[in-house]
Amino acid sequence: MEELHTKWEVYSPATGEKIAELDETPLESIPHLYTKSRQAFQTWSKLPIKERLQYLKRLRLLMVNKMDEIAEVISKDTGKVKIEALVADIMPTIDAIKHIEKHAMKALSRQKVSTPLMLIGKKSYIDYMPRGTVLVISPWNYPLQLAMVPILNALAGGNTVIAKPSEVTPLVGMCIDNLFHEAGFPEGTVQFAHGGKDLGASLTEQKPDYIFFTGSVRTGKIIGEVAAKQLIPSTLELGGKDPMIVLRDANLERAVNGALWGAFTNSGQVCMSVERIYVERPVYKEFLSLLKEKANSLKQGTRLTDDIGSMTFPAQIDIVAGHLEDALNKGAILESGTSPNDWKTGQTYFIPPTILSNVNHSMKIMKEETFGPVLPVVPFDTEEEVVRLANDTEYGLNSSVWTKDTVKANRVASQLVTGAVTINDVLITVANHYLPFGGTKQSGIGRYHGEQGMRIFCHEKAIMKDNGKKNSEIQWYPYEGKYTKFLSLFQHYFSEKTNWIQFGKEYLQLIKISKEKRK
Ligand code: NAD
Image 1 (cartoon, rainbow, N blue to C red):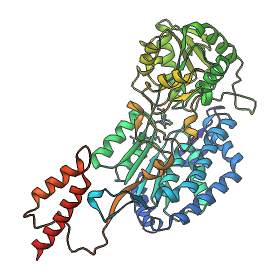
Image 2: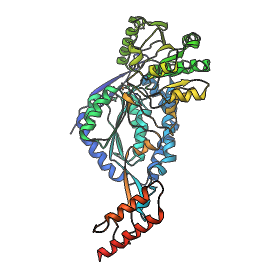
Image 3: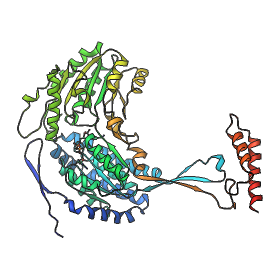
Image 4: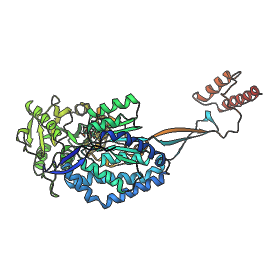
């Protein structure tokens, strides 16, 4: 059957030029993708982990050779500066492959676990079984990493994958598709569906065996509902409104530099970006003035000499403008940047780095995800107050605490309801694949990265082994004469101090009764 492809025009967010015309994956092809995926699962899942890792290694080496080419595609498609494509999108992906190559064997092989004394003579293990077809749906802000890292973890675990990268950055989606193709993964093992929301929604309705979703809370809830109806296990990696807390004894120069990068990298389109800063009052003025001075020296554009690229997605600009207007209408003061009315209009999407003061929690800018280069800064007086303000949001992805006092840092960090906290640093937990990644509250459900990042794509199978030599077990039939013996056995075993002599006696008695009754 001839498939009808819809033509898809792609425009550069930084220049407004048309840069490509692509074919969307037709909705009608989805059942075929699933059939192919399920067929490929039969062989891919049976390959030894070592062999699966060979494919991942080939992909890694291919990406190392093509690093600059990939950075070019990401920069063109997103409007971000090339260094950010390299350092924050490509490098973490390649590092994730390296991590999987090093740890998958151990993480996914049979694990021996202890067996309690009550089950004497047996051995216990956990096996990690691939689930089947994993559906990966990803966003546009780090379009390479957020698609590839879950795909790679799922593949390492023996699953086959259907991925739907973001329609906002289709060139990166195509680039990933080509990379897997060129690395020689077996037919059907990893397939791509290129298109938008409707395609994503149809893919979720075809009963994948796992859904790994990264994106907005709004879509996360829709996907969570579909998954719940079908009892499909899923991970939801959603948005954030991350607070940065600067205490009076912090290294202010470092805190300001961290704030600038944490808030403005990728034009603020980062789920874990610094979206609001609380500064202890005695250092507030100094912090704000240094922050303004440094923000004004940042260069916008997409050359190698520039610091901040363009926004990626036009609809996001409206959200940023809405938050900014709401804050300005409620009395916020523009310390740097301009009001949305003065943003350059036209086809390109550069928003100047914007700093706000005189803000409070009645404003959207302090509670809702802005996802743009806008940074509100607030003074605070007490630790209790700042912890309350930091937690006063529906989100809970990341946060940071800045101080030279380790005790204070740990005390504040322990009270923040977020999936990660950095101390004297920003965002960086995501770059360490030994750490779990994920959110609390509306920021998501589940964790990935590290060993758990591989294991979520497997179901754990509990195995217990008996050598099969005994003809029966003490708890098996017949029960006659055993109740009081068991009662006494448990009392001796679980009491404050185990009475081993009595325990042994009761146990032997039970074995004896079992043998006699069976005669
Ligand atoms: P989005 O939710 O609009 O889209 C994400 C993906 O879901 C896209 O591929 C889209 O086509 C698809 N989609 C949309 N509707 C769908 C539906 N009904 N069924 C199935 N798929 C559907 O998000 P976005 O605008 O692409 O990304 C920005 C958001 O992602 C921000 O909120 C950001 O914080 C969040 N994000 C979270 C993380 C994290 O790891 N926690 C990382 C990056 C971005």
